[in-house]
Image: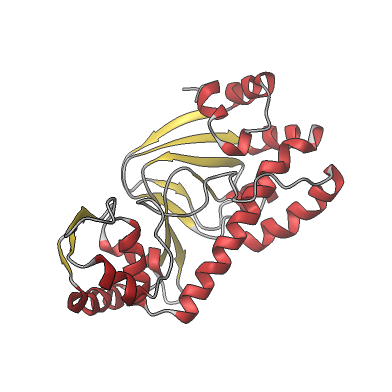
Length: 265
């Protein structure tokens, strides 16, 4: 099934593509639907497709020296999966599996590369996304180094609150706690301890349901001094960046893309 020109047009990564190029990309691409717990990419696979998540959640995991896998992140829509590895033709650094039912656009990477080489200006939104993603990863490293698992959990829960004036705020976690541990960067036992640490500031949880009785206290615990963004994961939308499109010459763009993508792997 084709994704449709309007679906592709709505994706910021393809914002520089005209109607003719979108039509060409549409004919080469697929719209896929997956159920929960289906493998999209295995760690070490050589990827020849750019996968863009339209709806649902996808978990990434990395193999451990002693055997088994450890969750590393949960990807929320709308966002590419394996962005850097696909564009650079590298092996996938992590495995990716669906957490929930999901819809994805699958773009053959060779066709996309051909378009980008023929018209380098089409790559500007890709650079925008790479820079935004690099900035997000830098902030994530700072959170991992400077804040406790309980504070990172508090920050995540605050992002899920739709009405900041609600008292109490009630919501359901979008996926299981074992995936949440990977999302905030801790083990499952540490996640349980983090939830326990939030009880004195008014957070209670039963299965996947969460109640926050004092949002101000939770914000203070998290160490936040600025208003929260809208509910949900706050990773950059594919191709968007607060500063808008970076105005670079085609040759400079091509010179910069590789090193940034390697960093993102």
